[in-house]
Amino acid sequence: MRRLLPWILPVVVLVLAVSALSTVSALLGDPGLHRTIGALGSVQFVLNTNAAALTSAMSVLIALVLLTVQLTAQRYSFSVIDIFVQDKVNWLLIGVFIVTIVFNLWLGLVLKEEYIPGAATILAMAMMTVCFAMLPPYILYLFDIIRPDRTLDHIQQQFLKAVVPAPEPRAVEQCRSDATKRIAQMGDIARTAVNLSDGAVARHSVWVLYWSIAAYLDAKDKLPPVWFAVEEQQFRGRHGLIVREIAETMTWVERRMLDELREVFFATLNKLHDVNNTVALVLRLLGEKAVERGDVGLVAAVAKFFNTFLRAAINQGDVRAGYHVLYQYRLLADTAMDSQPELTLEIADRLSYYGDAAASGPLLWMSAAAAYDLRILAESAQHRGTEHAVVHAIVGNLLDTVHRGEAKGSPALSQLYKMAFALAAYFLSRGEVEHARLLTSQLDRVPRPVLERGCEELMAIDDPVFWELTDRVVNFDFVEPEARKHLPTLLDMIVNGGSDDRAEPVKPGAAAPASF
Image (cartoon, rainbow, N blue to C red; front, side, top):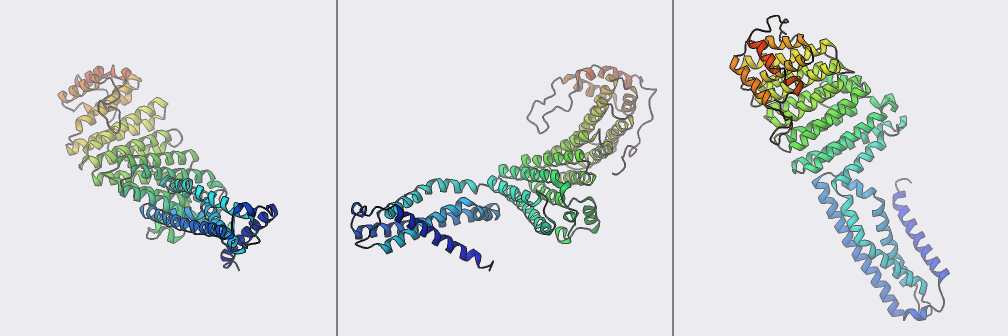
């Protein structure tokens, strides 16, 4: 019976609608009104013409709809078809057309010389007028609902329906399937937009992915335990250790979203940098939300994807993408400094590691960006009064970056020296002599002309904004005025042996944090 219901119900509704219209027309009709309507032949001609015109208009309309929906679905996602099918306005318009056509045909059938229902005829004409009047706004409405952003909003709503509120135990499997399907559709639209070089749609897709997962995290604690079971087909082809990790951390939904972000990021390398910048930004925001929730499993996953993005940028030689990811990664480390210092230390170690990896490839200036990020991170830690060991470890990461640059003879070495020099000046301005001496002890073997040149360049910059349009905006050589005043003193300490009483140098690898 349930299978027949979708076929029977429209027939029943149509019969009831036409019957109701006929009954209302009969009750409101004036027996003498037929004299003002005209002869039987002319009335029948008008009604038949109405039915034919409406039928032709509906045929053209349906053809237009099918063509538009098909082209949009092929361009972005077949989920557009679901939107059209489920939209109530579409059903209402088609229903009004069908009822009006059938009512005109039945009315023409019951007309006789002695009986011309005037009220019913006027009603049929009015319904025909309404149908044609609805066509222009409907076409505008149709073009509006199939826009990619509306499609994405619809998919997001469907995703949230699957997780908010928490589904009943018997509906968990269906809701899990729906959630997985919606995430895949959002990612599919994003990748298609990238392939079409449609940056606006791609960026919106990435944001919708984030907004969906952010809302999911807010409702995650209310979901039943069975929701978090990991099915093999969801991560087919993944190593068993990865699947076990996802199951233990209960992050299968987040990992599906992160996998979609990864595919988008890979697709935007060496093109659409505004999109891969958005991906890095969204990844950082998700990490911050995980830190706020104390979700260790999600934090670890976010860090792993940041590392993967950095490696991909280096392998593909995309320096701008590398800059974006390094910057967002450093901001995440800064956010986690108070509540999860071990995460900050791990990120600092990774910044040094990938800065060195970039220096050995075509992206040598990524090492300079990594050194700058480590410098800013160390300054932030000192400013916040973070534990001495944390600051010491970050300083060690910066010195490791300098050591590796020296070992490879990196062309960016002078910039690395300047970052260490600027950080030492900052510590000196804060009265933190130990860390200043630690840094100067590593700079005393640098040729004097190199140090003097670096000091001159740091002293000459008084505007934090770089004089060109760059991805980072800031000038790496800018030193705050309070710290800048100590640069000459620092240079004298190094050149004239003022740092003889110095701390033990940090050995490469000594600052590496424990895994978390």
